[in-house]
Length: 513
Image (cartoon, rainbow, N blue to C red; front, side, top):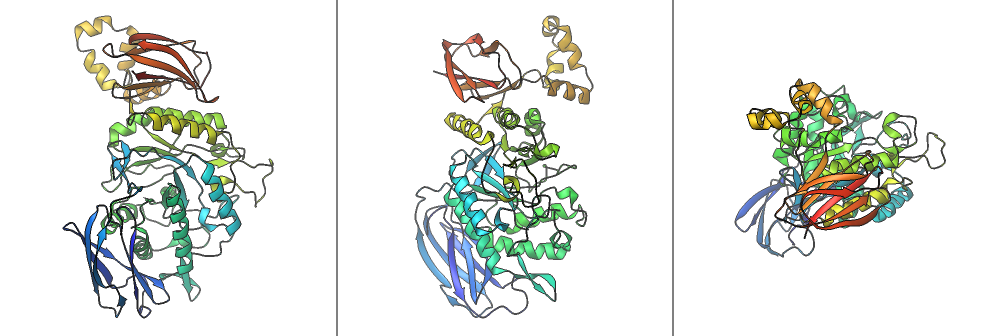
């Protein structure tokens, strides 16, 4: 047993009578005096398993609770060694993300919805591509997807059929074995799996399950997968389009997962039109489908949770607006989000030969190979983010309306404030929001150690920065598209005018000496 590694106990017994999900098996683990009771699951062929995720080093003992006639290590004790290289699960830390051991986690995601439902050769090609790609989080589905450019019939499904109907009490063990193997491969590569539990793009009947069937499915999934460290729970992809699911089910699902996941994985819900209420007590972060990246600080302020733009359109050439933005624009959206302390997810919908057939392979659906211009630039962004001494917080300047109005109550401040600022401050809230979306500074900082400002599509020949006078800074100008870094000033502070090349996509970074 090792800290931050999944520990597994295996038992043998007869096949369960009735449900193969609701088996009467749990184990009480005691590690350094802390007890945790973990449910077990049936894995087929007379094999039962219980999985435990130790988060500390020390002596761990266990005691099995069951009415089943099982053989195996029902009770025992073992030393849990300190972690060698693993960091534990990712957790929310205010508006940021960290592993359990305190290491920063910078979520640089991608999307491959039907990754696990492809033929073996495609899966192998996908993993070979991921080994060279910059992504450390992947959104993918448990259930297969039926949508344009994704009409293949998978070999395996999550459940077996009884009398021609899916039977949630009879898991397809070969499917779950296959899913687990892909999750473990991702773990070995340092990639988090953002597992999508439901979605509306279905013609097999999974999006028409009853509420009771959903809970049986979630029960098995949590018993089997929750001790895997590199998983997040995404309740759905576009939950609001699942017309057969009552809206009241979703907070119940979130509460059920929270109650039955012994380890508290990250959890959120993805929308199309009606945004999920991220203030939900069991929701750990904001999962957004939006291109309003400049509102990152608004979501941070409103919910006090990490903000991830998990769908902000895809680099592609298909005839849908959500799937044909340029690589340059996707990179722009990444930088806008990250500079203000948020996180962003890539997606690609590029037809390599420029033709669209039903069997066209698009990364966003099936994986395979990447063809776009954005991944290498996203790798460049990730490298710069990882070089920072800490997490970025947004620089809040003139876009905080309440702060502006409060400051203007001071006669001295009001006297020296330009009329245009006074007029902006008096705008109705929605009008102010719309105005500021096009006028905000995209800036972030790590305390007083580092300041970043991103000019996005603006093409300025100089940039004015205000840096703390008590420190001294070196300043770089970074071309986010050409991936170049140029040191332009040294040992400066206070009001600084930085020479710029008059191009879009430029970033200025000031580092304290």
